[in-house]
Length: 335
Image (cartoon, rainbow, N blue to C red; front, side):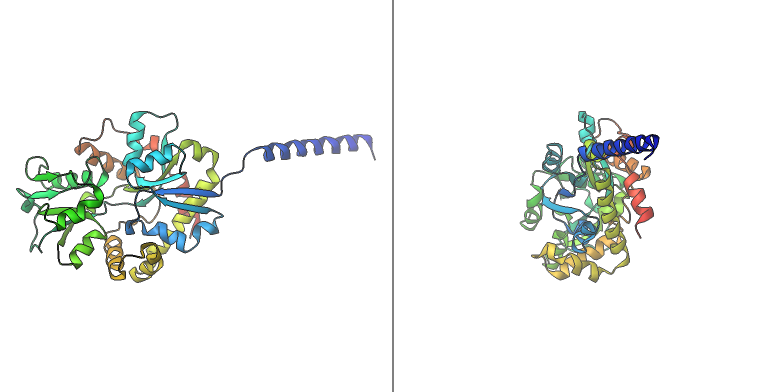
């Protein structure tokens, strides 16, 4: 063999060996993703569709879904590394940013785009007007949480001061709000589904308005992760977002009955008629986002809602806690 040719081949082989060695020395991206959902809710239907239809598996991901009740607990789990991805209100990323962090939390995929609560009265109200709430006792949600902020934003939109025009009750734990209302606390209550529908079905209350419709488009519930996880695992984050986009497309294109049947196993203790009614309500008011992109107008509306509630120390710029690149790619490529 020609000596120069041999030397050239040897150099080439050494280069290839070095490249292979460099690649193998790097840690592979994770294929198991631990999700912490802030609660188990029909509001998150597209997530359960992604699991039920095997969309995550199709992307090569093994999902460990756990419920981490409450925004504080969910964010603690994310920051401490107990979970990789949090499904929680985007306001939590703002609170983390305001406190300062070397490893910020980044919103990368939106799941719901409106508030998910409804106004429930003790009896049906003909020709409801928001001014009817003046002077009543109102059983609200936890102070500082997105439901309460959206509720107060809606009240102020209708020229009702939550602190002076009605009696605001906020000393009841989230899980006990429905039972407290049924037991006689408050003239009106702000409730998530399926509790609103269940109370209505039992004849103990009546859904008369939607805070989701009133408060407008918001990045309400979002998948977020730490910047370090995103940097180390960009392909995993993309695959995750692809799976959610497939589910969002599926929910968009299928009927209430089909969606309800698909996710029923995640709500084994909930009557199917209730599941269908809840899915119908959320789908009709466009609560389920059709893609994961968090646009600037939605973000600014969120900041306005938080500011009106007195929960915003300073306006956190959209670009500092949002990365739409994964959702934009998924929307373009996933059909």
